[in-house]
Length: 302
Image (cartoon, rainbow, N blue to C red; front, side):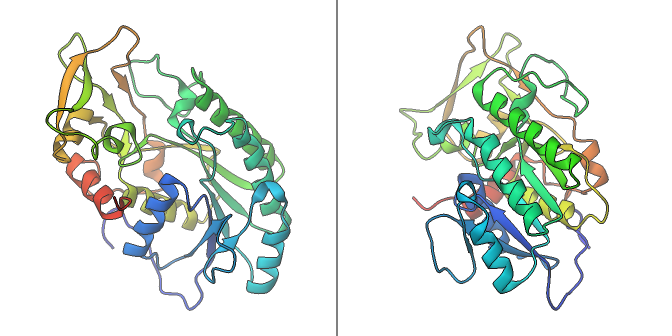
C-alpha cells in the first residue's frame, strides 16, 4: 500500500457514500479526482439539484425535505455515509446563514434513512487569524468574518446531531489548491497584469496551510473507512504550510510583490497532528509542485 492511500480491499459491493455539493467548486474537483483514481473501498454517489434522471447520481435538494433521499434508498439500498460539501461561500453571493440550515436538513435526513456517519466540510476560517502559531483543534474559535461565523454555526448544528447519536465530524479545511484565491487568478494573469502578492516587513510573503485535491480525496477515503467513531472536529491540510509565492511559481504564474497593508495577515496555518492518526500523506503531498499538478488534472475547462 502506498503512503497516502487508505487500506483498500476488493469488495463485490462497496458501500455507498453520497457527496452533497458535487456541483460546487471543491465538489467538482473532488469528483474528477475520484474519476481519475476511483476508490476501491467505497462508491461515490454525487448529489445534484438540477440533473434529474441521471442514473449514477442523487437528485435532491436537502432544504426541500428528505423525500427524494428516502425514495433513492428505498430503490437502490443503504447509504453508508455522507460527505457534506454543499453550502454557501462568499463567492456564491448567497445567504451565508443558509449553511447551518443546510446542515440541519442534511443531518436530519441522514438520521432518518439510517446513514450512520456524516463528514462535513467546515473551514479554517472558524479560528480567525490573530495567532502567530499553528491553530489547533483545542483552540477556541474566534471567526472574524461572516463566512467563518457561518461555518462555526454549522459546527454547532453538527454538535447537536452528534449528541443524538450521529457520527458527525467537521473538517476545518485549509486552502484547497485550485479553489483558493491565488490559483483561481492564474488564468487571468499575464506579464502586464501579474497577480499581486503581499510582502510583509520581514521581506516574506504570506504563508498558508494548503492541501491538494487528490490528497483531500484520499483523506476523505481514510476517514470514511475508519472503523471507530471520528472526533467532532479535525484540521485538514498537508503537514507542512506553504509559502504562496512557491505555489505561484510552481504554477508558472506571473506575480509581483506589493507592500502588505496594515491589516494583512502574514501567516494562517493549521496543526494537523491529530489528522495523522487517521491518514498518512504521500511523501510529496505537501509540495507546491504536487499540489499544482493535482489541481491541473481536475481544473475546470476554460
